[in-house]
Image 1 (tube, rainbow, N blue to C red):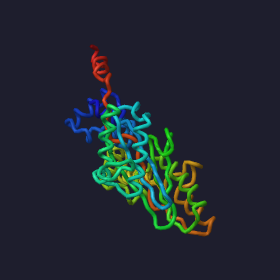
Image 2: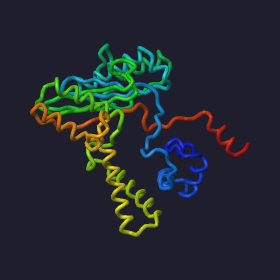
Image 3: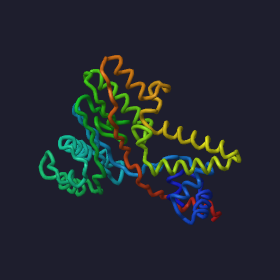
Length: 300
């Protein structure tokens, strides 16, 4: 029940009923809640649960993101931990490393390997820390820009984004545009660059939910089919970066923003890709007062 509540923000009794209706299957229970309009969050990872920092580093046509987790937010404010995240992100950028094992085995600037320094930090800081993931973006001509939302230090924060623009236009044009697009990605959290690249399983799941909701309307089959297609078109538009409305003006699709910028400078600009890391996304967080909440609901 707790896991279902954390992932949907639905009420406890609704979660209990959903689990009962679906034989205890968490994923099926989430879909059941959503078809009943009881789930508050449409995306799977609705609540962030881990502490630590996301590091962002760029160098012209390349960029890197690294997430390092800690047990508490207190450690994330520790200068030793911050220096480590910053340095490891630099290592990932220089080597184009995205594999965590390879990153751990890479040479650390101050000596030893990344993994060895991490082990030393755990011992000296007194709290477990882990390298969770890394990503990179590169272009042959253009820029890769980074953005950190609510940065605690330059290049370090809770949400990190990279955006890659391919173009022969100058960096003076591309960097401000890429930075704005990265800010958009941080705020709008797109799931893919375009609708065709959305995860097939996710699309199938959304269609099943849309079909169930539409079928409950009692309308004729042809109207139900149109309702489903309308729901799916809306889903693709709202979750693909190029079709999302640019947060800076709230009315222009991102694809049109990029095209207009290219027209203004007389050089085609292509949005090649993006990466967004939100600290701890997908990791569940224990709630210390859950037992008390259950007892209260039961009238104990």
